[in-house]
Image (cartoon, rainbow, N blue to C red; front, side):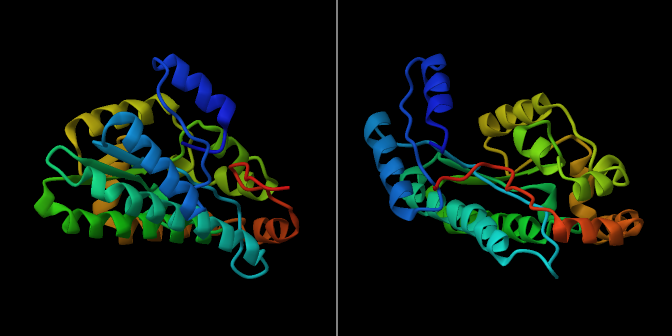
Length: 245
C-alpha cells in the first residue's frame, strides 16, 4: 500500500499478482480500509511493515511550521494508524510488526528536528507495542537506517543547505548502497528481529547515543550558520511527493 499506484502495480505483478492498495497513511480511514482489504485478500496477516516517511530541511527557528506538521502527520500518525489497524491481525505466534525508524531516532542533526522527532516517536511506539503484544506471541522490531541510496535521500540532499552539511558529516551522512538495507530487512523479517540496522556501523551507535549526539553536534557546527540562512530562504520540497492539488 502506498501513494504510487503505477509503481505498486508493477511490483504486485512482479510478485505474482499480489494485492495492492493506493493509500495515504496520513488518512486513518484509508489505512483502515487497506488493512481490512489485505486481511480479506490474504486470509489474515503475519507481518506488517510501517515504512512511509517524509522529511525536509527545517530550521526550528525560521522554518515553515506546516512542514513540521506534515512530517509528524505522515511519519508519526501514519505509523500509528498502520500499527493500530494491523495490530489485532498480527497478534499471534509468528506475527511480526516492523517499524522503519532511522538513525535520526538516536542522533539528531540540525535541520532535521522534525524528522528526528518523528522517528524517535516511531521507535517509542514500537517499543511500547512490543510489550503490549508480548502475551500474544507476536514480535515487534525497529529498523535503524543511516543514509541509503533512495529517491528520498537524493531529494533530501538536493538542496544547497543540506549539501553543505552533508559534506561535513563524514560517515553519518555518507550514502550507502540501498542493497545493504534490503538485505538487512530480508534477514531481519525472516528472523523476526527486534533490531535491524544498515549499514552495519549503525549498530555501534545505538548503545552510545549520548556520545554519538555530541559527535554530530561537533561535526555539524562548522559552517552551520550559512547553511541555516540558506535553509530559511530555500523552498525545500518534502523528500516524498504528497497527494493533493
